[in-house]
Amino acid sequence: MGDLWYNKSMKVLAIESSCDETAAAVVEDGVRILNNVVVSQIDIFAEYGGVIPEVAARSHLEAILPVIHKALGDAELTMDDIDVIAVTHTPGLLGSLLIGTLTARMLAILWKKPLFAVHHLKSHIYANWLGREEVKECVIPEFPLVALVVSGGHTQIIYMQEHNKFEIIGTTRDDAVGECFDKVAKVLGLPYPGGPSIAECARRGDAKKFKLPHPQVEGLDFSFSGLKTAVLRAVQAELGVPINTPSFELAEKLTEQQQADFAASFQETACEILLEKLKIALRDHPEARSVVIAGGVSANAVLREKVAEELLGGSGTKMDKTDDLKTRELRVFFPEKRFAGDNAAMVGVAAYYEMLVGVEPTDPYALDIAPRSVIG
Image 1: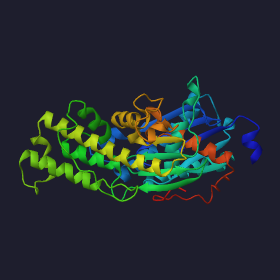
Image 2: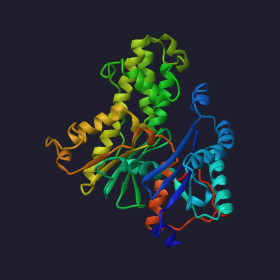
Image 3: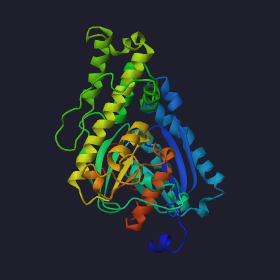
Image 4: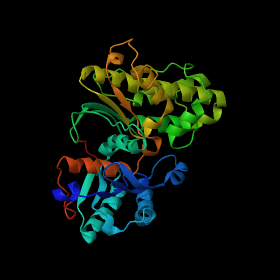
C-alpha cells in the first residue's frame, strides 16, 4: 500500500455524516481542497429547536449520493481519479453515522479503494491544516501542541506530541459548551442553533450586566450544566418570577435589551471558562509550541478575541511580556470559519496524516460505527 501515497498525487474522497450535515469533499495531498460540499439540516431542525436523530438519518439517506456526485462532478473527477476513501465512523448519532459509513464501505468495495475510518474530533483538529496553501507564507501547527475542541457535542483539551498521537487531558463532566449555548438560547427565546443566534443577539448587549458563576471543577475538566442553570435562575430573578416558572414561559417576558444583556453575559462567561482551562493546560505543558482551537464554537468571535488578547497580547502575532504565557513562542491557530463546523474536507486531511504515519486501511467488510468513543 505504501507506494499509493508516496509516489503520486493522492486524492481522498471524504464523507462526513456524524450529526446533521451531509458532506463530501475531495482533498489532494492533504492541503488542496478540490471540492467541499455541505448540505445542512439546520433549516429542518430550527423548527424543533434541536436535532431529531431519526429525521437526521432520513435526510442523510436522501442527500448522501447526490452530495458525493456533486463533489466529484464539480471537481471534474471520476472514481478512477480517487485513490482513497475516508469517512467519519465515530462519535456521533447512530443513524447518521450508519448512512455515511455504509456508503463509504460500498464505494470502497465497488471501486476497490482503500478505506480509512476517522474519528470526528481528530477531523476537527486537522481542520486547522486546511486552507493554508492559500496563504503566501504557509504556516501550519507545530508539535507538541495543545488543542481545545469545542462543539455542540464535545468540550475537550487534547495534547498531541506528534501526528496521530492524542491524549485527552481535560473534558466536560456534563454538557458540552455548544450544547450549553443551545439550551441558553432556548431559555432566551433565540433560534436554533444557539451559538450563532446568541453571538448575534449579544452584539446589542452589555457583557458585564449579569455576573454569572465560573464552575469550580478540579484540574482541566469542564462543567457547563451549572452555568446553564445559573442563567435560568438569573432570568427568573430579573423578571421577578418564582424559580418553578417553566423556562419556556420566560422568553416572552424579556425585553429585547434584557435578552441581549443575558446573551452577552453568558457568552462572555462561557468563553472565559474555556480560556481559563486552556491557560492552565498550557502552563502544565511548557513544551507546547502551538495552540489549536477546533470545533463549531471556534467560530465564535468573542472566543477568538479573548484567545488573541490573552495568549498573543491582542496582536495575533507577537507576545506581550506581561505574563508567563505571553513570553513563550506560541503559535495560535483557528480554522477558517468555513471549516469550523462539520465538513468532509477536515475528514480528508485527517485521513491523509493517518496514512503518512503508517496507519493501515480499514477492512470495509469489518468497519462498524461507535456512536460514543474517545479519541486515541
